[in-house]
Image (tube, rainbow, N blue to C red; front, side):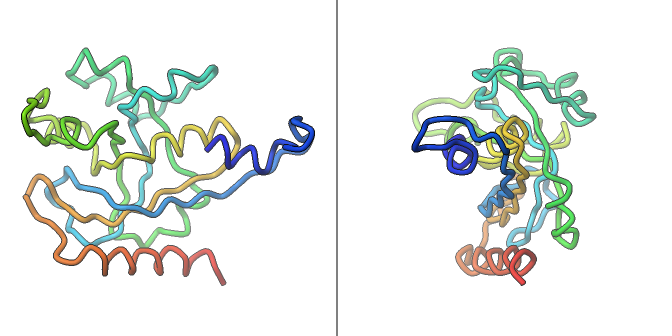
Length: 197
């Protein structure tokens, strides 16, 4: 994100900030798992609000974000050792308007790892086997590993961002896409058709 911004807002030859700010439109297309048992696999889900569990934005000055989703989430989040790492952001409503016909609009949790944060265990035990269910109880629809940084850094840097995910698993129901490659191709076409005339 910092490097994309640098390409348009820093004079790399002279190592100076440009006087005129350029705002990018950033589209993330990816995959996600759902924590909501009602979400069907192989459908498009647009992220409206996001909670980051990776702590990234606590390393940046001046990042503040609060809305109804974040306040409710922080009030009820029951894991005191994780709570200080949390941060929140939301979509570019302008870009979101391009995808009003998505099957789902939801609240996403961005995880810092593939195993314990997502409820998977090999030799090491996960914190809580109800973690994904708890997130759903707090209004989270799905999870992945990128959106919180994209949304939050976009806000700080003055860009617009949107994430459109292909739901390839419903972890609460134990349901998985039979052919996620095909549904991912449909996602790419569906997203691009709305931004390329």
